[in-house]
Image (cartoon, rainbow, N blue to C red):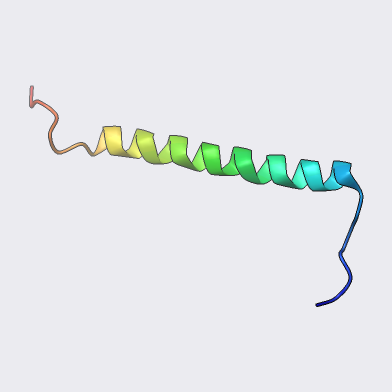
Length: 44
């Protein structure tokens, strides 16, 4: 393997927090999509 791109802990923290919040936002969108296309919802 090569050398690490950065050893600055703040850059690593920002990258990790960005990844975490992007995944959480994606899960939020998935839950909203499931609510929209829910086949077990009562028909009006």
